Amino acid sequence: MSDAERQARVDLAACYRLVAERGWGDLIYTHVSLAVPDEPGRFLINPFGLTFDEVTASTLVKITIDGDIVGDTPYEVNATGFAIHGAVHAARADARCVMHLHNEAAVAVSMLKDGLLPLSQHALRFYRDLAYHRYDGLALTDGEKARLVEDLGQRRAMLLHNHGSLVAGRTVAEAFCLMDMLDKACRMQLAAQATGAELVLPPPDVCEKTFRQLTADLEPEGELEWPALLRRLDRVCPDYRR
Image 1 (cartoon, rainbow, N blue to C red):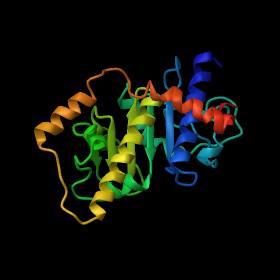
Image 2 (cartoon, rainbow, N blue to C red):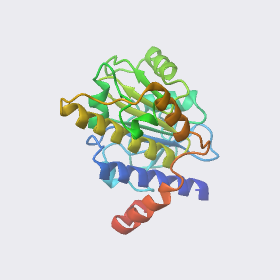
Image 3 (tube, rainbow, N blue to C red):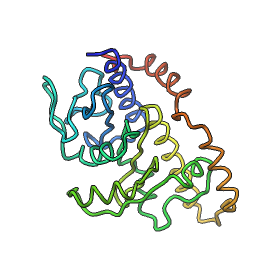
Image 4 (tube, one colour):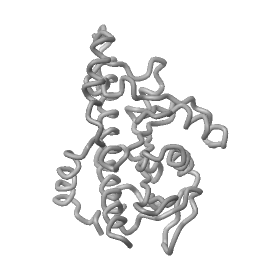
Protein backbone atom coordinates (compact mmCIF):
# COMPACT_ATOMS: atom_id res chain seq x y z
CA MET A 1 0.00 0.00 0.00
CA SER A 2 1.07 3.60 -0.44
CA ASP A 3 2.55 5.64 2.39
CA ALA A 4 -0.54 7.86 2.21
CA GLU A 5 -2.87 4.91 2.71
CA ARG A 6 -0.74 3.60 5.57
CA GLN A 7 -0.97 6.96 7.35
CA ALA A 8 -4.72 7.10 6.70
CA ARG A 9 -5.10 3.67 8.30
CA VAL A 10 -3.11 4.71 11.36
CA ASP A 11 -5.18 7.87 11.81
CA LEU A 12 -8.47 6.02 11.40
CA ALA A 13 -7.46 3.23 13.77
CA ALA A 14 -6.46 5.89 16.30
CA CYS A 15 -9.87 7.50 15.92
CA TYR A 16 -11.61 4.22 16.69
CA ARG A 17 -9.51 3.80 19.84
CA LEU A 18 -10.30 7.35 20.95
CA VAL A 19 -14.00 6.78 20.38
CA ALA A 20 -13.76 3.65 22.54
CA GLU A 21 -11.95 5.58 25.25
CA ARG A 22 -14.68 8.21 25.31
CA GLY A 23 -17.33 5.52 25.80
CA TRP A 24 -19.07 6.42 22.56
CA GLY A 25 -19.15 2.89 21.18
CA ASP A 26 -22.29 0.76 20.76
CA LEU A 27 -20.99 -2.83 20.95
CA ILE A 28 -19.92 -3.63 17.35
CA TYR A 29 -22.19 -1.06 15.69
CA THR A 30 -21.72 2.44 14.23
CA HIS A 31 -18.78 3.46 12.08
CA VAL A 32 -16.11 5.96 11.17
CA SER A 33 -15.25 5.89 7.46
CA LEU A 34 -12.39 7.54 5.63
CA ALA A 35 -11.71 8.15 1.94
CA VAL A 36 -8.53 6.39 0.78
CA PRO A 37 -5.98 8.95 -0.47
CA ASP A 38 -5.52 8.95 -4.24
CA GLU A 39 -8.10 6.18 -4.74
CA PRO A 40 -11.40 7.79 -5.75
CA GLY A 41 -14.44 5.79 -4.68
CA ARG A 42 -12.51 3.72 -2.09
CA PHE A 43 -13.02 3.99 1.67
CA LEU A 44 -11.70 2.46 4.87
CA ILE A 45 -14.06 1.18 7.57
CA ASN A 46 -14.01 -1.04 10.64
CA PRO A 47 -14.43 -4.82 10.35
CA PHE A 48 -17.90 -5.94 11.41
CA GLY A 49 -17.63 -7.93 14.63
CA LEU A 50 -14.74 -6.09 16.29
CA THR A 51 -15.27 -3.62 19.11
CA PHE A 52 -13.63 -0.25 18.57
CA ASP A 53 -10.82 -0.98 21.05
CA GLU A 54 -9.80 -3.96 18.88
CA VAL A 55 -9.43 -2.03 15.63
CA THR A 56 -5.91 -1.68 14.23
CA ALA A 57 -4.53 -0.12 11.06
CA SER A 58 -4.21 -3.50 9.33
CA THR A 59 -7.69 -4.78 10.25
CA LEU A 60 -9.46 -1.86 8.58
CA VAL A 61 -11.28 -2.95 5.43
CA LYS A 62 -11.18 -1.16 2.08
CA ILE A 63 -14.57 -0.90 0.36
CA THR A 64 -16.29 0.77 -2.57
CA ILE A 65 -19.00 3.41 -2.30
CA ASP A 66 -21.51 0.54 -2.52
CA GLY A 67 -19.93 -1.30 0.41
CA ASP A 68 -18.20 -4.01 -1.65
CA ILE A 69 -14.88 -5.23 -0.25
CA VAL A 70 -11.72 -4.42 -2.20
CA GLY A 71 -8.75 -6.79 -1.90
CA ASP A 72 -8.15 -9.75 0.37
CA THR A 73 -9.27 -9.63 4.00
CA PRO A 74 -10.54 -12.19 6.50
CA TYR A 75 -13.10 -9.66 7.74
CA GLU A 76 -16.62 -8.71 6.75
CA VAL A 77 -18.16 -5.26 6.80
CA ASN A 78 -21.60 -4.00 7.74
CA ALA A 79 -22.60 -2.78 4.29
CA THR A 80 -26.01 -1.63 5.57
CA GLY A 81 -24.33 0.42 8.28
CA PHE A 82 -22.16 2.12 5.63
CA ALA A 83 -25.25 3.35 3.76
CA ILE A 84 -25.39 6.65 5.68
CA HIS A 85 -21.66 7.16 5.24
CA GLY A 86 -21.77 6.32 1.55
CA ALA A 87 -24.55 8.83 0.94
CA VAL A 88 -22.58 11.62 2.61
CA HIS A 89 -19.29 10.70 0.92
CA ALA A 90 -21.01 10.66 -2.48
CA ALA A 91 -22.62 14.06 -1.95
CA ARG A 92 -19.75 15.91 -0.25
CA ALA A 93 -16.23 15.71 -1.68
CA ASP A 94 -14.99 17.58 1.39
CA ALA A 95 -16.45 14.93 3.73
CA ARG A 96 -13.42 12.67 3.65
CA CYS A 97 -14.08 11.33 7.15
CA VAL A 98 -17.66 10.59 8.21
CA MET A 99 -18.40 9.60 11.81
CA HIS A 100 -21.83 8.29 12.79
CA LEU A 101 -22.31 7.32 16.44
CA HIS A 102 -24.97 6.43 18.97
CA ASN A 103 -23.27 8.38 21.78
CA GLU A 104 -25.78 8.67 24.60
CA ALA A 105 -25.61 12.41 25.23
CA ALA A 106 -26.13 13.23 21.55
CA VAL A 107 -28.99 10.73 21.25
CA ALA A 108 -30.62 12.26 24.34
CA VAL A 109 -30.40 15.80 22.93
CA SER A 110 -31.71 14.54 19.58
CA MET A 111 -34.88 13.53 21.46
CA LEU A 112 -35.51 17.09 22.66
CA LYS A 113 -37.88 19.23 20.60
CA ASP A 114 -35.54 22.23 20.72
CA GLY A 115 -32.41 20.15 20.10
CA LEU A 116 -29.03 21.61 21.00
CA LEU A 117 -29.42 24.98 22.72
CA PRO A 118 -26.74 27.73 22.61
CA LEU A 119 -25.97 27.29 26.30
CA SER A 120 -22.22 26.70 26.26
CA GLN A 121 -19.26 27.92 24.25
CA HIS A 122 -18.96 24.37 22.93
CA ALA A 123 -22.54 24.52 21.66
CA LEU A 124 -21.93 27.87 19.98
CA ARG A 125 -19.43 26.22 17.65
CA PHE A 126 -22.51 24.58 16.07
CA TYR A 127 -24.81 27.61 16.21
CA ARG A 128 -25.13 27.76 12.39
CA ASP A 129 -23.47 24.45 11.66
CA LEU A 130 -25.81 21.76 13.00
CA ALA A 131 -28.46 19.97 10.97
CA TYR A 132 -31.32 17.69 12.07
CA HIS A 133 -32.75 14.62 10.37
CA ARG A 134 -36.14 13.07 11.07
CA TYR A 135 -36.17 9.44 12.24
CA ASP A 136 -37.63 7.07 9.68
CA GLY A 137 -36.84 3.59 11.04
CA LEU A 138 -33.95 1.20 10.48
CA ALA A 139 -34.15 0.79 6.72
CA LEU A 140 -32.27 3.52 4.83
CA THR A 141 -34.02 3.80 1.47
CA ASP A 142 -32.74 5.77 -1.49
CA GLY A 143 -35.35 8.39 -0.69
CA GLU A 144 -34.20 8.76 2.89
CA LYS A 145 -30.54 8.92 1.85
CA ALA A 146 -31.42 11.82 -0.45
CA ARG A 147 -33.33 13.51 2.36
CA LEU A 148 -30.47 12.99 4.83
CA VAL A 149 -27.97 14.55 2.42
CA GLU A 150 -30.36 17.45 1.79
CA ASP A 151 -30.84 17.97 5.54
CA LEU A 152 -27.08 17.97 6.14
CA GLY A 153 -26.37 20.43 3.35
CA GLN A 154 -22.91 21.93 3.80
CA ARG A 155 -22.94 21.69 7.58
CA ARG A 156 -20.29 19.79 9.51
CA ALA A 157 -22.57 18.15 12.09
CA MET A 158 -26.00 16.61 12.37
CA LEU A 159 -28.25 15.14 15.05
CA LEU A 160 -30.44 12.32 13.77
CA HIS A 161 -33.62 12.52 15.84
CA ASN A 162 -34.09 9.52 18.16
CA HIS A 163 -31.02 7.89 16.64
CA GLY A 164 -27.56 9.43 16.92
CA SER A 165 -25.00 11.92 15.72
CA LEU A 166 -23.00 12.50 12.56
CA VAL A 167 -20.04 14.67 11.67
CA ALA A 168 -18.40 15.22 8.29
CA GLY A 169 -14.72 16.11 8.56
CA ARG A 170 -12.14 17.06 5.98
CA THR A 171 -9.69 14.98 8.02
CA VAL A 172 -9.89 12.31 10.71
CA ALA A 173 -8.64 14.89 13.20
CA GLU A 174 -11.41 17.31 12.31
CA ALA A 175 -14.12 14.66 12.52
CA PHE A 176 -12.98 13.47 15.94
CA CYS A 177 -12.52 16.94 17.42
CA LEU A 178 -15.92 18.09 16.12
CA MET A 179 -17.59 15.04 17.66
CA ASP A 180 -15.73 15.62 20.91
CA MET A 181 -17.01 19.20 21.03
CA LEU A 182 -20.56 18.19 20.07
CA ASP A 183 -20.69 15.46 22.70
CA LYS A 184 -19.43 17.83 25.38
CA ALA A 185 -22.01 20.44 24.36
CA CYS A 186 -24.76 17.84 24.66
CA ARG A 187 -23.55 16.61 28.06
CA MET A 188 -23.28 20.17 29.39
CA GLN A 189 -26.83 20.94 28.25
CA LEU A 190 -28.25 17.78 29.81
CA ALA A 191 -26.45 18.52 33.09
CA ALA A 192 -27.84 22.06 33.18
CA GLN A 193 -31.37 20.94 32.29
CA ALA A 194 -31.25 18.24 34.96
CA THR A 195 -31.02 20.90 37.68
CA GLY A 196 -34.47 22.21 36.79
CA ALA A 197 -33.20 25.77 37.22
CA GLU A 198 -33.83 28.58 34.75
CA LEU A 199 -31.29 28.51 31.94
CA VAL A 200 -29.17 31.48 30.85
CA LEU A 201 -28.87 31.75 27.06
CA PRO A 202 -26.58 34.32 25.40
CA PRO A 203 -28.42 36.84 23.20
CA PRO A 204 -28.56 36.03 19.47
CA ASP A 205 -25.97 38.65 18.51
CA VAL A 206 -23.45 37.13 20.94
CA CYS A 207 -24.23 33.67 19.59
CA GLU A 208 -23.62 34.86 16.02
CA LYS A 209 -20.39 36.64 16.94
CA THR A 210 -19.02 33.67 18.88
CA PHE A 211 -19.86 31.23 16.09
CA ARG A 212 -18.01 33.43 13.59
CA GLN A 213 -15.03 33.65 15.95
CA LEU A 214 -14.91 29.88 16.46
CA THR A 215 -15.10 29.15 12.72
CA ALA A 216 -12.95 31.98 11.39
CA ASP A 217 -9.99 29.70 10.63
CA LEU A 218 -10.65 28.06 7.27
CA GLU A 219 -8.17 25.23 7.88
CA PRO A 220 -9.49 21.85 9.10
CA GLU A 221 -10.06 21.77 12.85
CA GLY A 222 -8.09 19.47 15.12
CA GLU A 223 -4.67 19.85 13.48
CA LEU A 224 -3.01 20.96 16.73
CA GLU A 225 -4.92 18.52 18.94
CA TRP A 226 -4.37 15.40 16.83
CA PRO A 227 -0.61 14.90 17.37
CA ALA A 228 -1.15 15.22 21.12
CA LEU A 229 -3.93 12.63 21.01
CA LEU A 230 -1.71 10.25 19.03
CA ARG A 231 1.14 10.68 21.52
CA ARG A 232 -1.19 9.67 24.31
CA LEU A 233 -2.37 6.59 22.40
CA ASP A 234 1.25 5.65 21.73
CA ARG A 235 1.78 5.58 25.49
CA VAL A 236 -1.32 3.63 26.48
CA CYS A 237 -2.20 1.36 23.50
CA PRO A 238 0.44 1.53 20.74
CA ASP A 239 -0.94 -1.61 19.08
CA TYR A 240 -3.47 0.52 17.15
CA ARG A 241 -0.69 1.15 14.63
CA ARG A 242 -0.27 -2.57 13.92
